[in-house]
Image 1 (cartoon, rainbow, N blue to C red):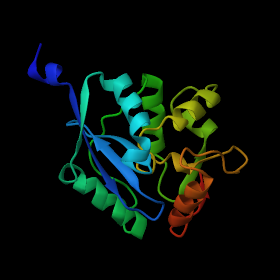
Image 2: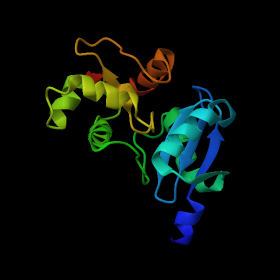
Image 3: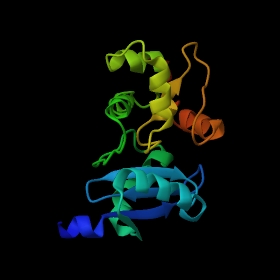
Image 4: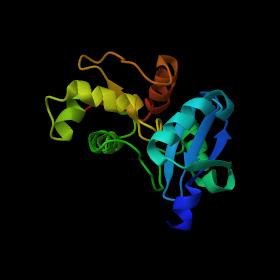
Length: 181
């Protein structure tokens, strides 16, 4: 057993302030793996369950320095100075979920798409409901822009952070362009 296996995965996290409330950012040595709306204390149990499922042995360490670049990019995004994010991800999910999350990254800033569009984009046109389920499990909302998903007829559909946050994010992006793909 290697030293890393004995120790488990180190999950570094920090909390950042944003116009939509506090956010918890979490990363492994491989990249950003989670973003939660709220505080670490408030979501600690949920984060623990998530980490138990995907990492097994792990340790949480508060580490603002490790996450400073993504925190700065989020600050730029909320100011309207950034339209996409740079950096590595360590996505934990099924292969299908990862395909959906990758397709979400292709939705340009200021545009929206439907579950049907994403299902077609990943080559599973009949998997519209499954796409909705994967969208709901997106571990890195805002950065993987699941807020850009709307209903087929253009209506707003649910959002893990709440519809008020979804509206805020869409409004933030709207001044640049407002088209549906």
